[in-house]
Amino acid sequence: MTTELEARALHLLETVFGYPAFRGQQADIVHHVASGGDALVLMPTGGGKSLCYQIPALLREGVGVVVSPLIALMQDQVDALEEVGVRAAFLNSTQTFEETLRIERLVRTGEIDLVYVAPERLMTQRCLDLFHDARISLFAIDEAHCVSQWGHDFRPEYIRLSILHEQFPDVPRIALTATADQQTRDEIAHRLQLDDARKFVSSFDRPNIRYSIVEKTTGRKQLLDFISTEHPGDSGIVYCLSRKKVEETADFLNENGIRSLPYHAGMEYAKRAEHQARFLREENIVMVATIAFGMGIDKPDVRFVCHLDLPKSIEGYYQETGRAGRDGGPASAWMAYGLQDVVLQRRMIDESEADETFKRVLGVKLDAMLGLCETLSCRRMRLLDYFGEPSGPCGNCDTCLIPPVSFDATVPVQKLLSTIYRVDQRFAAGHVIDVLRGVQTDRIGQWHHDALSVFGIGNDRGEQEWRAIVRQTIALGLITVDHEAYSSLKLTDAARPVLKGGQKVQLRQYQKPVKPKRASFSS
Ligand code: ADP
Ligand code: ZN
Image (cartoon, rainbow, N blue to C red; front, side, top):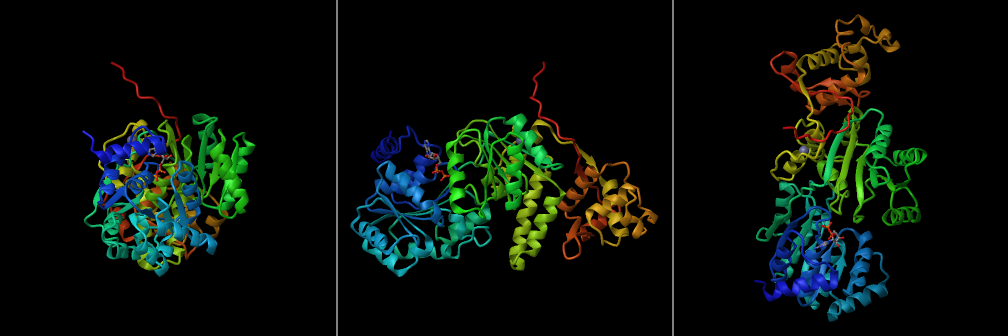
């Protein structure tokens, strides 16, 4: 049995937006908010959050106010709504005064369905007065995680949004976000005074995305192999940390027959816009970009997202990889990750301007990301677990398809720790590995490290293998990299029980990259 409200909502969905059915929890959310209830909506990117407030705004009398920090996207959102005949506008700092006056008039007279505002604009007395004069159907607070002080997108103005509840107690509010672990979720509910709001938590699972994380050796060459063997002729995104690496990687792919475009914030605006437009329009094209690229990008047939550098957090990784396979077809999230990434990301935290508490939060987030990289179990399980969602082995990630072999690494880790100790904790990974492997370099001669008892005790393993062990030992917190002193490796307190022999260490066996095999069902 459908109520009248539900029938009207469905009618709008079909006639205005052109979709035959609601997806997931959309129908419930629309019904709840259109009936005047408050809501906190957690839905992954691409899940269809916009309709959750757009349709209630059309169903209810008055103007729907959408608070969004993404000023750059407001024009696109308004254009898209106007295209389907919804009367929409925005109020932000990019407008002329005349334009502002015109929009304000429309809001006051109710000749508009939706108005987008930046949070700092909303907080002005002028804007609050305007909304008191007008009839407001609802407040939608998009990107609600910006209220969290521990998040990477913290916006101080978001905290003040709680006054919406105080000043407009009868207007329903819907807060939406794609990224919120349990702590951030609580923070949103608390700071926006949405403790009594109904929570709608969608699954974060993207079953059509195959996750894989490989050991970085050559990086760029591995990327080329991956694209040419797994995704020839497909469109995709490759994320790199620096602008320089973006340029170099795009050049490298182009030279090797893969049509690529660079995108980063250092490029001229016109060039960036052109590349973005081409990526959206054309097929068989790869965008090589910094994380500046992607907010609000809606290209359904992105078949792969690659990371040549380690993201800072699982939230970032999830958001970026989530741009693959929006059409539901098979897609890949591929990352190459190595010792250098760990060293670099830790250094970036150490050298950042953030205060100690915030640095600790960044460290915890990075550790969770490293945990995902080093896990011996299903990647998807690990990912969903981070978002508080229980699940089982997925069968569609690298660790499910080729279970990693773990081994008792107590002895090699003890050798590593002793060597670090013997060289007085004053040398970087490269030199420590040379000592372990017994390589006669000039530096080793200069420091007489060939005379140490540990010289050559690890010559049963190759350099890559040792790098993998060092990387995992850092991830486990047994050693740290001292950036104040030439990236030298230092032992932590946690190393002591391992050195003394009381504690065993299990590590992932170093494996040369192999292609996933299909599961076979023999009788
Ligand atoms: P989000 O804000 O959660 O990232 P959007 O609201 O931008 O997601 O929606 C993502 C895409 O899904 C858009 O192209 C949108 O038009 C489409 N979409 C949303 N709801 C539906 C639906 N019920 N049926 C079909 N497509 C939908
Ligand atoms: Zn899996």
